[in-house]
Every structure is written in C-alpha cells, then in structure tokens.
Amino acid sequence: MAFRGIDIREAGDRILFRAFFQDGAGALETAGTVTLKLYKLQNDGTLLSYDFNDNTFKAGALTTETQTLTHRQGNNSTTDTGLWTYALTTLTGFTAGNIYFALVNDTLGFPTDQMREFQFGSGVLADLMLSSGTLSEIVDVTDIPAEPTPFQSLMLLYQWLRNATQVTETERRVFNDAGVEVLDATCSDAAGVFDQGKLGNP
Image (tube, rainbow, N blue to C red; front, side, top):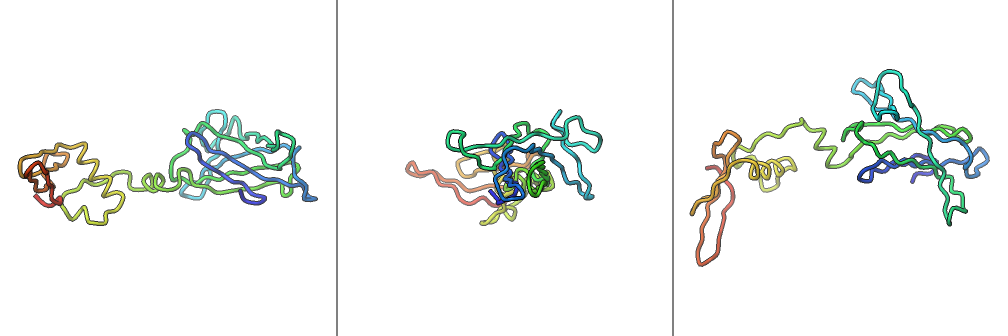
C-alpha cells in the first residue's frame, strides 16, 4: 500500500480500493467521511463517470456518484489504522485493458483528495483485449516459429481443437476453417512407439 495514497487490487470477483489518510497534524484519520468516485478515460481524453446505482460509466448525470469507504481497525477492532477500504463486487461496467481513475475524498484528511490511475485486468488478459480483437488463422509453418508469440501459440491450439484434424498411418493433418489442409506432421508407429515429427507445410 502506498503511503498517503490509494491502492487498488483486483482479486477474482472484485476490485478492492484502499486509501490511507492522516489529518493535518499527522494523526491517523478515523472519523471523517471517506467517499470514492470512479472515472473511465476515453480515447479523446474525456472522462465517463461511474454510477454506483447501476454499475455503469456514463457521460450524463449520475444517480449515485459516490460510494462510502469504511475505516478498518486491527487487533480485534481495537487499534486504529487510518486505512479505509471498499470492495466493488459488480465488475460488469469494466473492460479489461481500459484505463480508469479512482478519486477518494476524506472530509477531515490532509490532503482531502487522492487520485490513482489503474488499468483493469492489467497483464496478459489486458494485452489480449487490447489486440485487434481477432487472431488470424495459421496458414503455413512460417506462422509457428520455434519461439512463437502468445497469439501464435493460442491460435495453433485453437485451430487444433476447433477445426477438423486427421490422423493416418503416416501423417497428422490440421485444417483451416474452410477445410483446407494447412499443416501436417509425419507419423510412424513401430514396436508400440508412436512418433510425430514437427508440423510443417502439407
């Protein structure tokens, strides 16, 4: 958790917002009203605001603009921490890879406002969602190098599982969506040992 900052963590079915506040004298802030606002960054630099009423981002007026955070205590709820949290469990309004901002206000905090930028579903999922949206079919061996990209690896597995395949005594074949053979590998079976060569051009 960042000192005097908002920390945001995605954990499966929720986004957990955490903010640490002190007052102007440096004491832990435990009694103020701490609220959260969310914004979605558009490609033109404008923002959509999150409506906690229906869990969507909007350009127009909101029904419920803020969500209250709760102060958390340690040691069997006897030790103040200055840590405030809120778990958002409805994530239908978020898109993997998109950029969002969390703005937390504390009426008694110093400073009163903190903002943090975050990317929803950051990592491999976000990279996939930020791609063109579709993957091209493998058409020959040049599309599956010894060191493939994640997209090439996914597409090979996808075609192998989805499209028609054929195994004969001497070959194993992979077809594209139209039923045209695009890759094959030599096969052999001797003394109970099955061997398959590298996939290549048919």
